[in-house]
Image (tube, rainbow, N blue to C red):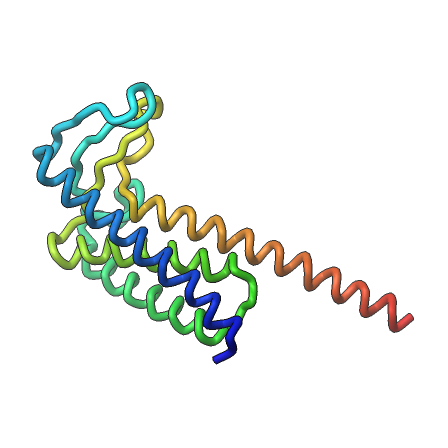
Length: 170
């Protein structure tokens, strides 16, 4: 394993550890502080805390399909681990995205395995129809956005390289 690749792993693991711990601790704290369905002000006018047990995925899709969600999560985690070691990307964005995605996936997987549901508690006060979410969901969203940015940057770089090669060949 190259020195550069080890350095990039040193980016992935701390992001993973810090965000996973933040997710699990925040869920534990909210569980201890509020009863199911109870709410409390957090950032007035922006975010409040409302305890919800989500038996599905985002927006409640696949509700009651915990086994399917657990199996899919294991498949996604295995695929991302394989990708991380197979794709020796030197771009830190790739590894940063994986750190967030691993943490979010594992945080919600822990809930599904331990409780049979995911503990959600963050709610936008100004957007009632937006689903209640948690730190793991934030991690997944941030990770996917960064991964998309990584792929767009890679496509642009590869396109430029191909264009330069064509121009050099002519």
